[in-house]
Each structure stands twice: as C-alpha cells, then as structure tokens.
Amino acid sequence: MLTTLQNPLTLIGRLLFALLFLPAGISKIAGFAGTVGYIGSKGLPMPALGAVIAIIVEVGGSLALISGFGTRFAALALAAFTLVATFFFHNFWGVPVDQAMMQQLMFYKNIAVVGGLLLLAAHGAGAWSLDARRQD
Image (cartoon, rainbow, N blue to C red; front, side, top):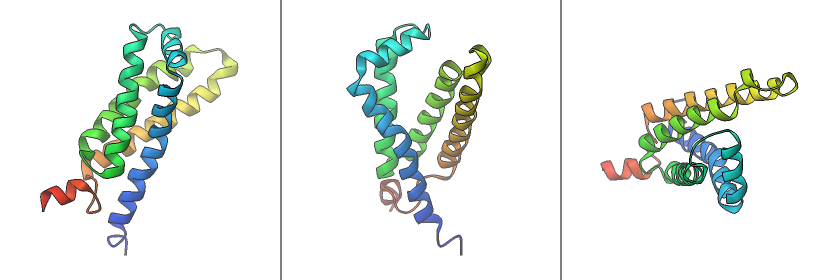
C-alpha cells in the first residue's frame, strides 16, 4: 500500500518544504533592509550579500522543489543553507537563559528539516516531477 502512495507523498513532502522556504524568501525580499540589518546584527560579514544568497536559495530552491526540477541539487542546497543558518541564528548555547528554550527548539527543528532534505536529495523528486519527465 505505501508504495502506491510513494509519488503523492513525495509531491506533498516537496510542497511542504517549499511552504517553509518560499514565504521566508519572499519576506526577505519585501523587508530587504531589515533582513540585512538582522544578518549584520549577528556579526556576519557582507550582510547584503548574505541576504541576496538567502533569497536565491530559499526562493529558487522552493521553486525547484515545487516543480520537481533539479530536486536533488535544490534539496542539498537548502540543507546546507539551513544547517549553516541554524548555527548562526539559533545558537541556543550563546543566548540569555530566557531565550535558550525557544532557540533550542528552533535549532533542533532545523536539524530535522536538514534530515528531511537529505532524504529528498537521496531519493529524488518521485515520478510526479519534471526530473522524472526529463528521464523519459
């Protein structure tokens, strides 16, 4: 039974990942100055470039996942981006105690997202994707 659900579940999984990243990327475009300021507040160099990279990865990666085009590469790029961002923006070990619990939850949520993206990279987009159509 689960093998018959493999393609629809993979599509739903891709769409749910996109639902996480696409609105985040769009909000970074809409609030570009605030995004640059936030990145800069973490002490990262070249915050404007970092914001542009984040937008490209989040929006581009989401569109790739939605269409199922370049899915393995997009999933790897989103996983790497998420992993790096997690250590800079959810460093629960370096925040005041009253903020640590929330940052720890966000940290481990992101680690789980990375795990899911790695599974998607390993197994691909499924038959309901542009990647599958290109192989025909």
